[in-house]
Amino acid sequence: MPVYCFAIHAKDGSPVETLGALPLSDDTESVTFAEGVIRDMTHAGGATYYLGWTVHITEGKRGVGSIPFAAS
Image (cartoon, rainbow, N blue to C red; front, side, top):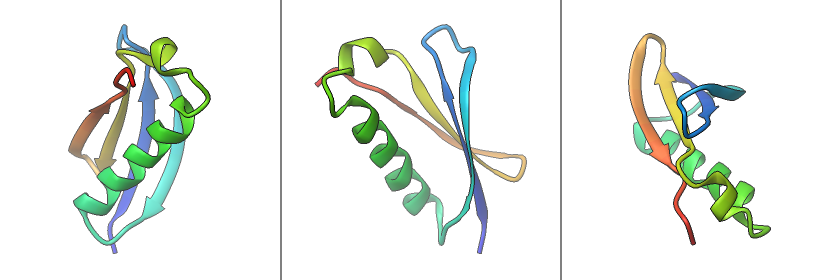
């Protein structure tokens, strides 16, 4: 099972927090996890604060994707 790493970056691209690594079945599951992190962080009305931030996903040295925080 591949191990995916997740890191949050501010709108200026600087790293804010590394969420660690998680073994998941595939890229789709890693994106779903990242979307859940974004949902949890913006749930309390912080969507405007986090606008422009991203969750970067990697698996080994391979970039899987960057999921943007969006205003709700």
